[in-house]
Amino acid sequence: QQQVKQSPQSLIVQKGGISIINCAYENTAFDYFPWYQQFPGKGPALLIAIRPDVSEKKEGRFTISFNKSAKQFSLHIMDSQPGDSATYFCAAILTGGGNKLTFGTGTQLKVEL
Amino acid sequence: NAGVTQTPKFQVLKTGQSMTLQCAQDMNHEYMSWYRQDPGMGLRLIHYSVGAGITDQGEVPNGYNVSRSTTEDFPLRLLSAAPSQTSVYFCASRDYRQGNEQFFGPGTRLTVL
Image 1 (cartoon, rainbow over the protein chains, first blue to last red):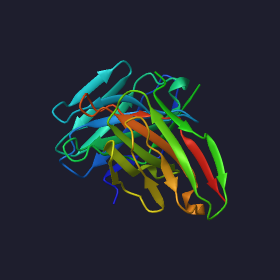
Image 2 (cartoon, rainbow over the protein chains, first blue to last red):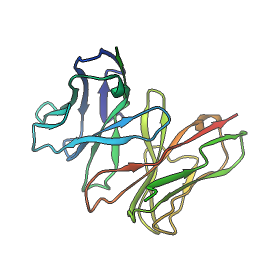
Image 3 (cartoon, helix red, strand yellow):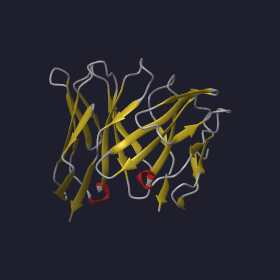
């Protein structure tokens, strides 16, 4: 049972464009939603995170939009750059329930010149 | 701070062989975990530990054992390797009392023939 569903599986965006990755979750008890960025041959690294009491969080070119009623959240990468080419994972944590991270299946982003 | 370290980086095993994947962290984190990453499946939790002497199963624990004798180390043992265990393995740690950022190691790429 996939508790966090992520789409698309892969994404190609032109340099300067907007990259959008979507995630949906099932467990309404999740209370922390991070996004991880992974470059080839490396471990994932935290990119940005949001709590469900906030509808949007922005850090530089990266923005998380959160829709609690729809149980969806998304990552927007503005002015996408070739250096943003990586695999992105959304995740969810139930901090009071063992603190286990549940990951989406990942989106492979390629930003072309 | 070395962060989270993993050895070996690459390993090839024959079916039925056993081995231990090593993981260490120097951040004094109580929470440590092991994930496997397979194409299209995201990161799946194998086992986790909330402190020395305490371990629990994750989503895909079969065929793997763990122990946590110290805060720093969290080895993962493959008891009798099978081709289905061919994967990239990531160890991670988190100080869940200080926030939810999870730090990942560089990974071990395991091939079982």
